[in-house]
Amino acid sequence: MRGVTYSMSVSLDGYIVGPDGAFDWAAPDEDVFRFWIDEIRQVGVHLLGRRLYETMLYWETADEDPSLDEAGQEWTALWKPLPKVVFSSTLSEVRGHARLASGGLTEEIERLRAEPGEGDIAIGGATLAAEAAGLGLIDEYQVMVYPVLVGGGVPYFAREERRVDLELVETRVFGSGVVYLRHRVARQA
Image (spheres, rainbow, N blue to C red):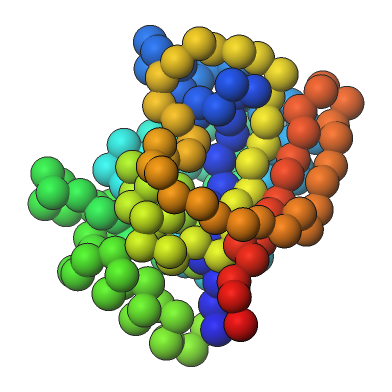
C-alpha cells in the first residue's frame, strides 16, 4: 500500500513560513536542492493545498526560463509530469498535470492507495497536512530543519492535543547546517 508522506522545510522553531508570510530563509542550497530532486523521484502523486499549488506553479513553466540551471531543469522535468491533486474551495480550475480534488481528503487518499501505481502519496501545505494528520492519514514526516528562528507564522505541525508516536528512520546533516529528519508513524499492530 502506498504511504502518505508530509515533507516541508521548517525553521528550528517549527514554522514553514514566518509571521510576515516569508519563507526566503528556506531557499535550498545546491546540496539540499539535489536531495529534494532525489526525493521527488519516490513520489507517485502529490497532494497540495491551494497556497502551495500556487507557489509551485512557477515550476510548470520554469523550463522556459533560459537562465534556469541544470538542477532547476532536472526538478522541472520531474515536477511537471507528476500527477497532482489540488484541494481548494476557491479554485475552479488548475493547470499542468493537476486536477482538483473530487472528494474529501480521506476519500482521495483511500482512492489513491487503492489505485495501481508506485511511489508515495506526498502531501504538502500546512493546512492540508494538519487535516491529514488529524485524520491519522500520514505515515511519514519528512522535515528539513533550517538553522533559523522566525518567531511565529504558519506551524509545520498542527497545534492539537493529540499524541503521535514516531520512529526515527533517517537523518542527514548538510554542510549549510540544514538537518533532514525522517520519522515513520509508529502504528499499533
